[in-house]
Image (cartoon, rainbow, N blue to C red; front, side, top):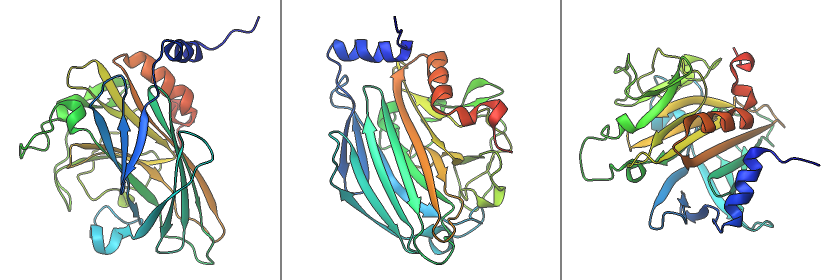
Amino acid sequence: MRFLPSSLLLLLSITAFGAEPLQLARDGHWLIIRNPQTPGTEIRVNYLEAYCRAGSSDADWVKQTVIPHTSRQLPSEQPGVLRQVDTLADGVIVEHAISATVDEVTFRVTARNPTPQRSDAHWAQSCVRLGAFTGFESTSPDLDDYLPKCFIFLDGKLTRMPAKPWATQARYTPGQVWGAPGVPRDDLNPRPISTLQPSNGLIGCFSADETQIFATAWEPYQELFQGVARCLHSDFRLGGLSPGGTREVRGKIYLVSNDVPALLARYSRDFPEHRPDRIRK
């Protein structure tokens, strides 16, 4: 007899009891994620916010870092899959396929450079707005009010923000950046860069009532980032594409119950490259 993995059995049992997958929609440059199990709630993702050049840690964001791009939606041959293509000003073409199950969103990205010049596109931002999810969607001027709901992993343990020491000096403030292993510190977001090195590439937060977890990860990733719009990022890495070059990137958003060990086990299966024994130096 063939036995199915426990994670697949759980998914099958949830589906059998009528749970619907997360619903995906587009609203201009926004990706909208709605959970049928909690009607009336949604998470908005600025997808994609920006494609960026290297040397960004102390550069003017608009004039030097951001590479302009256009985006258009494509018809999909697969039900439930959103497809889009971005064209960067330097000619790079980036295709996206986005799909969902009952508790996660999967991103498949293919970037290719059809030009005879090397591309300056080193990384890209997917900005997830989490004010409503964490219970801090308000007119309050304090955009850090949601920080105690947010976390990264330090020394293998979930650590809520603000993690100490908390950097405060940068070209632009506030915010906090944690560079991925092997990524030059000169190539990160121009917000305060932490001296801390997270144990993995997962960043997330708890819902207002602490019953759910949002978390996200990408491979390869450039940085983890806590931003200034009650947002969290795992920004993905392109590394600059050579003429004719192609780069495959994948990402996940998890919307799961508050079970941290189960989330970590799932993340480890999805991103084996992020395991401590396989981290890029």
